[in-house]
Image 1 (spheres, rainbow, N blue to C red):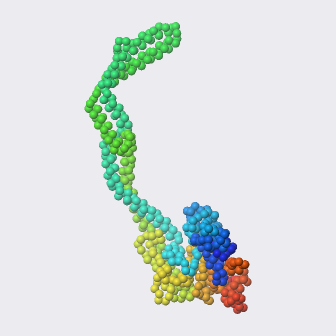
Image 2: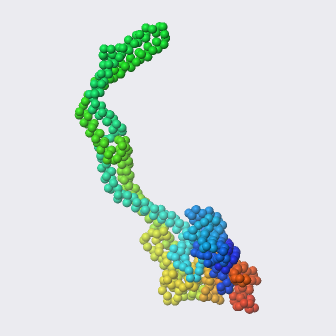
Image 3: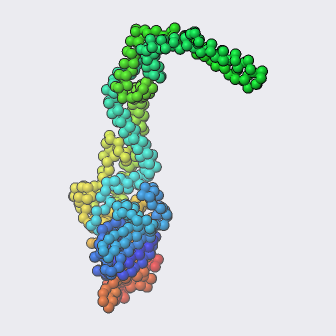
Length: 554
């Protein structure tokens, strides 16, 4: 609810600060005194456009600031979504510079007008006589009907399941699309895997084959070189091993004179043994190395296959090919699993749809149960407000398609006069009729739905006397559950106020300014008496005003 409104430098307002009652606040004043300016200021913090023409002093900025208590409005999610700091006490501020630039703030954080408008729409219901009101909106009509049907818990359960249901349908569509594309891809993957499986690739195979082929192609050179080396080391006259033996005999002959020579002798002996081993291995290589044309052709064919696969798949070695083969096998498994996944998701959706239809049927039944009582109460209250022949009909068309609110299409149809056809409210109701219909419907759901602060501008247009008194009673009843602000010319409605503000003009030396005053008991009597008669009021009007106020304990 709105706690306080502060206006600086707006239109013909220099500075105003208004504190609102938690229940019913009434604003009265002479025509042209500036009541509409208050609504204009509220419009600014609701995101309406503005320019520097609105400035009282064109050299200073205009500021409109609203202080709200919002603990009951479930706005935490909105604040989180827009990265705003949440507090149960909210300050909304709008500034207009002399250059016409506009800035908006929520709890001192700058926001754009879209965010400001969304938030303000949740905390202020600004009911202007000829505005498009939310009672026109089919979604709001359904919301009111669900509130009366006590569908809050069931609807929350339904909508939670419906959200999952929609997500699953989306996922199923994606799976089916993927599956339709998979047929061609599976065929191609299977073709590639068949080629890989036939190749029977082995890790590091390419390097080993290339080395083996290199040996085969150079077998004669290797055999000749190995034979020569073995001959030089151990078999020729003056073989290296024989020469080292002679070296070692000479070293050994003097080791008794120098212990160091004994160490060197051991080292030479080790070299001799190592050379004998080398010679033996080289002889073995020479014996085994033979050029095998058939074997060389087999290896070359194998390598050609590997080179072909490397080029085809644009990778560097056999290990890369093996990795690719593994990836293709995994893809094939995933595609083959699609059928199972689709079947499971389809089954899940069928189960959810059945559950949703059961919940939707319960919602529909609850709605239909309250329709007759709701229509009757609307007719009764409209009759009290001088609309004896006006009728409201709640149309519920139950279909087969599941929506976010069930299977019902709900719309309020209105017939304002005897014999009138029932038509959608926006097509038939006049401004005055719409004002009263809105007041009546909202008063009926006030205790069941978290309506924001309700602000009515001259909702009493075209009525007076006893009808106005009844409207005042409706406003008073409505204010028992919600904060209500009403700008009125009706003394009967004004008498129902918990707080009564009087808007007036004050003539200064060089210009006119608007002021607002909170009236005390005696001032209220005079103000209402003047609304009943003239200024100054007649004695009878004063007595009448006292009588009106006595009904609310003033």
